[in-house]
Every structure is written in structure tokens, then in C-alpha cells.
Image (cartoon, rainbow, N blue to C red):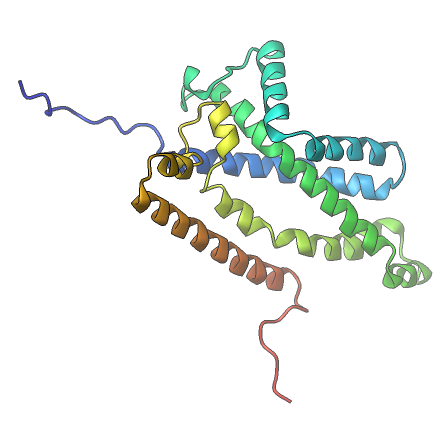
Length: 234
């Protein structure tokens, strides 16, 4: 019998591809929700919206990630009848992606809310805002043309890191939902004493980290013309 004579089926994404798709959607959800809610908290500082947002932020920071992932998985499977593991329907079914993406986006949403609130509040208390008010500009013009534009600059620096970070996968999320991604690759290699894979994955992570920092600096210089990588000699 020619037991090695068979056709390979490659109609599903690779490990890195699965992690990348999940990470990109989680990043999109985080920015779509985190930025507006952070701005809302800043504009309603010390009011109900701000306090409610801080409750969520403190919950995500204080509670271990494994705990709230299991909590949201229980709620998703009980209330919305979503699959508890990725392999139930596979990557071809949208339902397989919903809970892992939401669980992966939860800490990013909290982080973006916290930092956006901080940067916006700092800009709202700046001297140039007071001068703009004395010049007769409306609050909406001051916020859209000055406060938000300056507050978003530090946030922009993390976008390349979020995109490239999606290639590394998420260890805890992928283990809980049995996602065949790249997040568990390094831990499996360590457990099996596979030195070649350990060195390769470590180098891969290092290259992504350095590249994300460089791209973040370049993106900041594109958003803010005041940032320059070269200075004229005096």
C-alpha cells in the first residue's frame, strides 16, 4: 500500500494566519470602542460616564485575564449560544471567531480608554485651550481642531505594534478557546526542549518588536509635523 500517497488539504489558514486574523479584528474592535469611550470619559470627567468607565478599567486591570475570559465565555455560550471552543465549527464559521475576538479585545479596550482619557484631560487643561476660548472659538471647534488632534498623537504610536503584535498570537485566549494559532508555539517548544524553534520564535518576536517601534515613530512624525528625525546643523 502506498500509504504516503495522498492529497493535502490547505483550505484553512495557517497558525500565524489564524492568530493574525483574530488579532486584527480584536484591534479594530478595541480602537472602535476604546477611543470614543475614552473621549466620552474625558469630556464628562468625574461624572457618571467617567465613573462607569473607570469601573470597567479597574475590573479588567484587577481581575486576572483567565478569570474574565472564562466569565465572558460562559455568558456568550449561555446567552447567545456561541461555541465555547474554536474547533466546534472551525475557521469557516463566523461564530467561531466572536468570543475569542471579544476576549482578546477586552484588555485593549480598557487600556485605550484609560490613556485616551488621560491625554484628552491633559490637553483640556493646557494653556492654549484657554487662549482659544478667549479668542472666541466654540467648544466643538477647540475640541476637534486642537484637543483631539494633539491627544491622539501618543495613541498613534501604538498602532503598528498592535498590528504586528497580532502575528505573535495570544497564549491564554488561544488555549481557552482551543484556537490553532501561533500564540502557543513558544510554550510548546519550551516544553519539548525544541531549541531551534525557541531561537527562531524569539528572533521573530524581537524583529517584530523593533519594527513596530520604528514604524510607530514614523507614523507619529507623519501625524505631527513638529516631530522630526533630523535637525539642521547650527
